[in-house]
Image 1 (cartoon, one colour):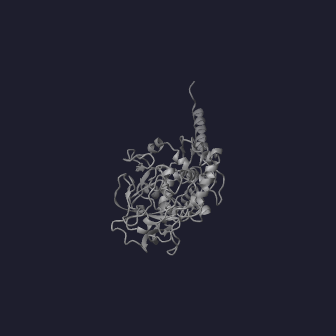
Image 2 (image 1 turned 45 degrees about the horizontal axis):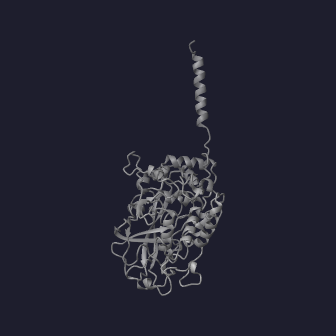
Amino acid sequence: MGMTRTNLFALGLLGLLGTLACAEQPLAPEPGEALAGGETTVFDAGAHAFSLAARNLADEHETAFFVGNSFFNKNWVTAPSSTTARDGLGPTFNARSCSGCHFEDGRGRPPLDEDEPMLSMLVRLSIPGEGEQGQPLDEPNYGGQLQPDAIEGVPAEGRVIVHWAELPGSYADGEAYSLRVPTLEFVDLAFGPLADEVLTSPRVAQQMIGLGLLEALPEATILGFADPDDDDGDGISGRPNHVWDPITQASVLGRFGWKANQAGLRQQTAGAFLGDIGISSSLHGEQNCPAPQLECAAAITGSEAGSPELSEDLLADVTAYSRLLAVPARRDVDDPEVLAGREHFHAFGCADCHVPRLETGVLEGFPEVSNQVIWPYTDLLLHEMGEDLADGRPDFEAEGEEWRTPPLWGIGLFAIVNDHTFYLHDGRARDLAEALLWHGGEAEAAKQAFVEASASDRAALLRFLDSL
């Protein structure tokens, strides 16, 4: 029997009502979205939110975690000392402990004024060219980073003062903003001027949470996001950094550091002990004493009979501590404004680099971080971020305008944990809006979408980011 005009109208009306009902369905959190660190996630949004053990910490790792925590937080002392497990500081150094830069396992910041020393920030140094393993070439007189402190009898290398200038701008709706532009001044240099061709890069310490989960991501997952030639034409051309691994003595995928210049957490930990505190290990046995620094080279170290200052056991414990710090849970995931901001995050293109959801593989010996669904908001790849953010300093395969996509988990807690809201590699952004406005290069389209959005849409996106 044929369908009557009335029946056709009724069916059409039902279809329209169904479509409208679907369109009016409220936004909702995705399954598991609040558990940013999978089963490691902890439910703490206080001052110690970044310093807690993974919620699923295995019994066999408890001792290593808490011993590692102790050596992460306690100051090292000058050798020789009765506390032989903690002596060997320097001869030159940036901090006396890991927590000196990563206070409460959180994020560092630039000095608040020109008289304040750099407490949780450092400046990398190099000259054009690369070493045998593709690494940056050290500045001849000062090495790979300027070290403003030294033990007694050894000259400190010098200081850096950060000067700021304001750069005004406005959103498409006319609301004004201002960005601050940093310049560095090197003063009190003990071994003469820096090389004429010196390359410099200021870096603040990054938060420590979730590092074991990032280490457990399969290499294939990270490489699967790479599109170095932008074959899909979306303007995003992330690519991996390949770095020298002192453990395997080979070039491998980098995944840690502002330019993904460290292969794993053991390598990252040992490198920081030497570069920041002056503590040698099995991976880095030689002190950082450039040729002109004779007092540095002659200083007594904490090594006994040629052994490193950091024992293998302690290196393993601090590495385990770094792997097993928990990720705090998301907040306000079902708030309507947060959910609207999440939609803008995707619509503006932010998620093209800050990939929300990933799955870890197996990290041998660490079931806590293995086979987890996580929400780190990163692809761990290098992206060209434009001339305004460029440091001009290559690092292995990373170019001067490239930076690794930083994970966003925890960024809404910096004000609580570290009492500041300074973002980006050098802390130039004073809030999340400024951080977005500095994006360029591959992120230019996303930045422009933010600039052209309504005030309410901008507020929703910022509210979403603050919930991470």
